[in-house]
Image (cartoon, rainbow, N blue to C red; front, side, top):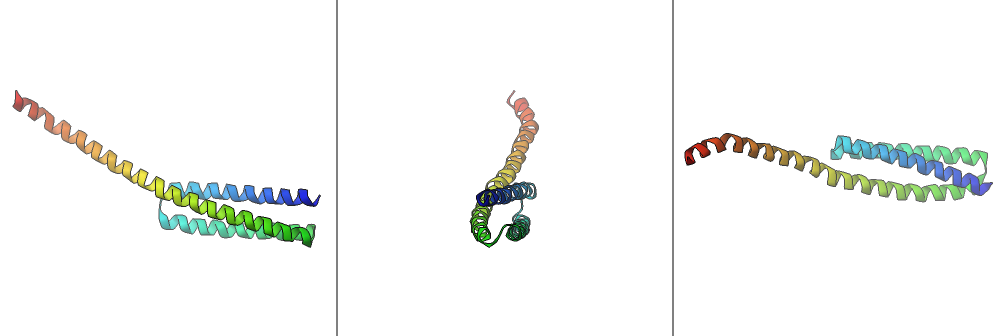
Length: 130
């Protein structure tokens, strides 16, 4: 029973964290900015930590102290891993996606420029050559 409770709580916490991380990543992609993402990320991490603490406290009241020690250790480790991973993921997304987006805009701009210049300059050249 003890193990089941621990596993269930840890799984719930992990699921919550994963969902939150996905949301944060989505926001990071939409916002695409550095500062905004960091602020959102910090807020989310704080919220998640609060949720975890609440869950642990509730479990403590319901089940008992020994399990809570295990739980705190487990959720602590999970949280650290998830936060580090999430931070890395978000940094990767910001580092990779933002340049790609901006680069594409630049490329598209130059591409349209080159088409425009080709369209405007080639007919006179053709006429000149003939």
